[in-house]
Length: 315
Image: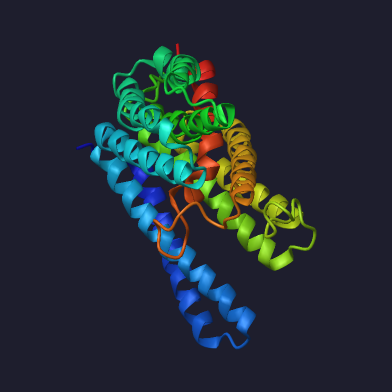
């Protein structure tokens, strides 16, 4: 088990204070809300706060426990997320053998490459080798009905739920000069900025939201919420530069990239849900949807941060 660094303790304390304040405000609003719409909004807010408590406790416990525990945690999250994705975009009985390989071979192997670490194979295993394998394995069943659609669903699920998510614990293995032993802080930087961006976009949208960005995909997302949330989360990222290998200016740029890619991930996943005719990917987190509903912003932002840091900050 690794020790708790100053950065982790500071961020953990800050988030604890924010969650306590949010919980108190939520309790007060629940007692004072009068209109039906107001009560519904407060109930949604309190459900989000409870989910944030759970997620923060789990993530911080894993990060403090060390790289192995963190990798296992995200492997489990990938498994559950892939299960949600495949359940929402059903395939046929003839795909069961391919899905067995996806869940019980591809997921463990991808995270084994993370734990090694073997960055070359981590980067190409699913996009190249698994892409080819799934395509070939799907033909061996002899079922050609909706073949392209079925195969694309499995490949998309593996890319989003396994490949993209695996880049989060992979940050722990990067050898960054002058940053030894602090990679857990970089993981927390990513998670904090991405999740706070979602929170701030929600808050600014409720306060000032008027103009819808994509009303048919995500009716609650507004330009006012997007701009306010991205700007606020970018400012938070710049203020947290001290827990990263970046300068304040670069930290702001990285945070901006995380928030923009996080928004893109959210809107893409919303398109998938709307196409399937559902509101959430699942009900794993009580009152707050499924695993994918909570990590959709990380799915797009994690690979971008990982490869930027690896390209510019490692030998």
